[in-house]
Image: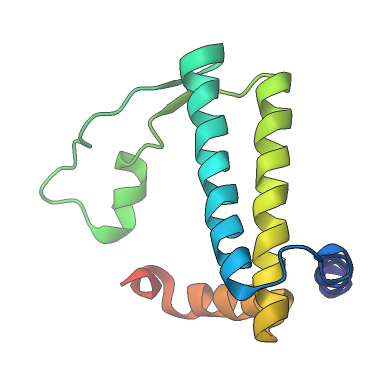
Length: 131
């Protein structure tokens, strides 16, 4: 089911990506789209105020094990985006996904296969995957 969702999405992107078909266009549009996601989140904090950021250095005991680290870490995010901000963030994430799928199409990669491989790496390697 999920495989079909990714395939259908990639096919729709391929069908409707006409004007910005160059790899350079897709790369820069993808970068712009991800920047707009960042901007939408920042506006939720700075303009709307529905979300706040309260960042500080994590207080991790020196004897904490790696498996315990998660309980000492924070997203630094307080609150949830309001309906208006949520809609904008979702829209910008959708544009980012559009250009990610376009990049997959241009390079002959399958988004679902990439996601499945990444999940496999995560479950196999766990935290070592990120190094």
